[in-house]
Image (cartoon, rainbow, N blue to C red):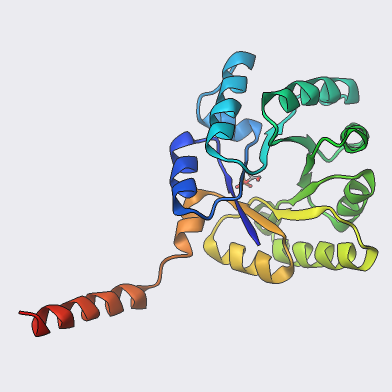
Length: 218
Ligand code: G3P
């Protein structure tokens, strides 16, 4: 399974990259706004900076909601770097844009996915990646991980190549559960990735090893 980081924060991307386990980056307009990045030139430069750090796929989301605008923006975004993936929302126009980019061999990430029906049509349109939002489904008292499991089964039965990119991941447990449910990739904030490293018994055990070593080497 691959790890993407879900942020536009350069320091956090560097930190995850330095761990040696980072396979890609996802961003969205909210994450760009959180970093104070606005204006076409600044946004373009920010994507360039991210692509300079990470070789793997970097999702850059279109703002337009009509197919012509999505295609225009997507083509511009694709010029930024060879590893840019055009992130497109799950709408009727979005599906048309995904189909367009798929036929041109430009990778896409279909975002804001909340059902298996949406997953089916995105795969049929040729989406490279599919982003079901695990946390936001849990937020409405539904089961985000169950959706990942159902989409994984659907894609396996039908032989779709679209990769399941579990998104809106809120904690380390979501990562493990999404992996077990068949996600190809998990995109998550840095604290959720770092949380995978933690266990109190590891800290206690290490402290004891060091103390015992110190005693016998005094
Ligand atoms: O990848 C989508 C993600 O950024 C949304 O996360 O926590 O805002 O639901 P969240």
